[in-house]
Structures are given as structure tokens and as C-alpha cells.
Image (cartoon, rainbow, N blue to C red; front, side):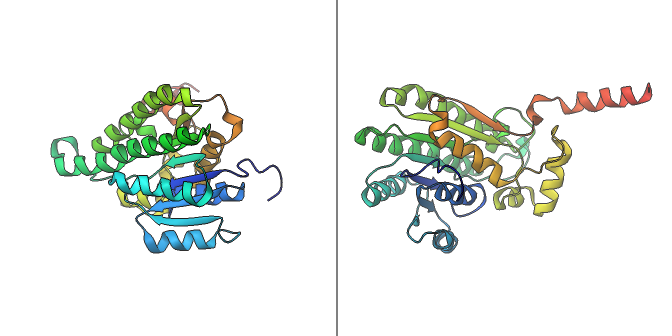
Length: 273
């Protein structure tokens, strides 16, 4: 690709890399020179995505269920044994879970959401951090949080709680791993029409995008998985060399505005024109 390769010679593991934001990030990281390991439970899709990324061998797939710490450790070991190091961990795997209201909260569903989103993230940070510390690599660990970690109302209670926990893990890890030169950050996207979001909202991609645009303060662009991947690329690259413990929000300012108040003020202003 034209221009500077921002991850040339780097090695990255991306959990949940077979689709959605993870897939877009795998393609972008590889295009910027990184050797990428996709770690996912979607075997066929993961292999297909890895095979479609050129040059051959630039991207590989390993099966990884992030609920199992040993599988995350194995994915990290695969990257280190294959490429000699680990520079970037993008802990992106997640699930939405049930969309039932709080009064109908199912504890088994809560456990499942926390197991994937929180335990999986904690294990990814732990084992990536260990690998980076062992080789003296000043690496970058990035975790996918959400606007649901900033405000209620964007997602079900279990998912919202899980994303708040991820931000907490990132802050704690940034403090502890800083002594090893390892940076830890998260990226919090607004509504992206990924397979995960569409399944959770039970809406087709075009409807998810329509809702996202309607609520965003930033008019014109439509938020895509590639936009979140670009944010992850910044956090993975040397351009963010002194950024750690940060939550990079990609939301068109939707969390900066009280939507209800804004609509009331707009209506009042219109009446007095």
C-alpha cells in the first residue's frame, strides 16, 4: 500500500478477528506490515479471512475460545513461536447476550456475557503482557470496550456492566504493565453494523446504520468497522507511543450530548423562529 507502513515488522494477535471489527482490523494491520494471528471460534470463517489476506502467510488462524484461559495462552504462544515475539494484542472478542430488561435479567446469561467479555479480556491482557515482558517488547494491548461503558441506555445491563469492567481492567493494567514499557488502552465504538450488533439488536445492517446516523451528532459519515480498526491502528502504532490507560471513543460525539435535552431545545428554538 502507498505511504508509511505503521506496523512493519510487528506481530499482532486479534481475538474475535474472523468478522466485524476484528476482521477489519486484521486486514488493516496486515496492510500496514504486521504479521497477524486471528484467534476466534469461527473456524471456517477465520481460515477464510486469513487465507484472503495477502501476501500468503501474513495472516494465520488459530481456534480460540476466550472463555478458556489456556486457549488464549496457546494463541499467544503460537504467535511467539511462529514469529519470535508479540507486539500487539487486540482483545476484541465479545458477545451481547440477552436483550431482556433488568427485571428479567437471567443470571446464566450474565455469567456468559462476563465470561467472554471480562474474563476473556483479563486473560488476553495477562498472557499478552507476560509474553511482552518476557521478551522486553514495548508492546501495545488494545481492548474493545463500548459507548455502553460511558452511558447507560445503549445496550442491555449485562453487556453494559461488562464493558464498564473492561475499562477498569485497562486502567489497572496500564498502571501495572507500564514498568515493562507495555501500553494498555481501549477503544469504545458507537453502533457499528457488525454481525454481533445486528444479531443482538435483531436488525439488518442497513437499519443499524440508519439508527446510528440518526442519533449521532456528527452528520455525514456512517460509522463502519474500518473506522474502529483505524482507531486500533493508531493505538497499536508508534504514533501513540505515550498513550496508555486511555479510552479512545469513536462515536461521533453521541456520548457528549444529552439527546433528550437536545431534542427539547431544538423544538423550542423552532417554535420561536
